[in-house]
Image (cartoon, rainbow, N blue to C red; front, side, top):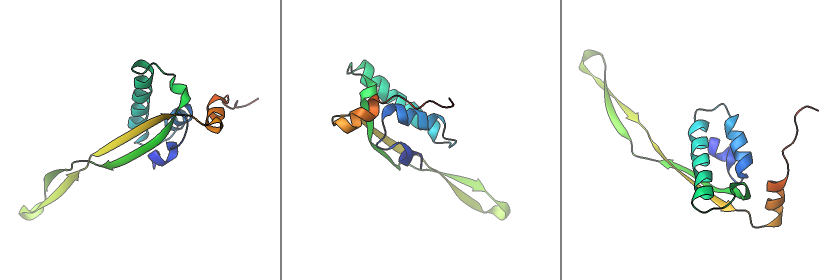
Length: 110
């Protein structure tokens, strides 16, 4: 659900959405987005403000199985699930997307 919120959004807009989304998954997604922005800035020497979230996928990862003891000698299985998150940032090339990126944020209040 959180991945659907920021897909095809600009980096600044995606960061704002993740900061104010009250879901448990928004904190790791925000950390991933900020890491990708830092990679763009430090490794490729590009401005992260010119980028948008082109692709964001969340796939199943390895699953750890544990045993939980129950009454009368029985046992239940507990599946501790993990996931793989892939985030791809692309530079905005068309004029419409660049205009959306350069647009100042709306003022709240007056």
